[in-house]
Every structure is written in C-alpha cells, then in structure tokens.
Length: 133
Image (cartoon, rainbow, N blue to C red; front, side):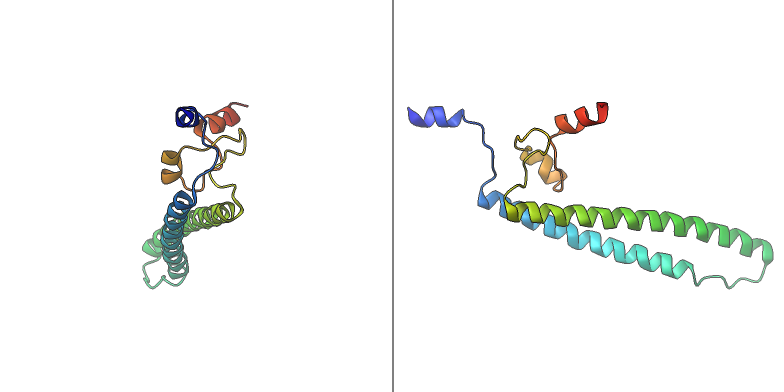
C-alpha cells in the first residue's frame, strides 16, 4: 500500500537520466545556434564588402537594401547570442541541480515544456502571471 501513497507525491526534481537527456538536447541546440550565429556573422561581414555596380541609382538602392539586411542580420545574430547564453545557463542549472524548477513557484516545469524550450526557467502559468503584472 505504501507505493500507492508514493504515486500521489508530486515530483520535485528530474532524475539523473532525465537530466542527461535534457543536457544532450541543450548541447545539440547550442551547436545548431552557434552554426546559425556564424552564418549570420558571415552575412553581416559579407554585406559590408559588396558594392561593385557603377549605376548610381542601382547602387543607392542596393546599399539601402544591404543596410536593411545588415541590420536584420545583426538583430538575428544578437538573438542567437542571447539564445546561446540562455542555453549555457540551463547547462549550469543542470550541474547545480536547479534545472527544471520554476523560479517563481518552485514547482517542476513539465517535461513537455522543457523539450520545446529547454532554457525555460518558469512554468507557462508563472510566465503568464508575470506578464500580467
């Protein structure tokens, strides 16, 4: 009968196996984000060296397009850098035993949420409550 009572106890930590699964997912996402960041940085650097046409009107339009593209790529690169920082912070939480615990409520963040947003620090409910304030 003791096992039935144990089934009703709310889990407050992920097992070492689950944490390893999250760690592998996060490492894959970091590698992918770093590749994306490298491509964005190359695109930003490449757009600075690309003004060869001699037709003044076309050149002006192309330069305007390059500036917009460069700004957009820079914005995307900044987002990738933040994403990588957030993922690395999640790895630290795995190491120190706080991964998957909502910072607002102390409850366990559902595994489904962490599989989609592995750097999440709050449950969806806590995040929504925070936005309402």
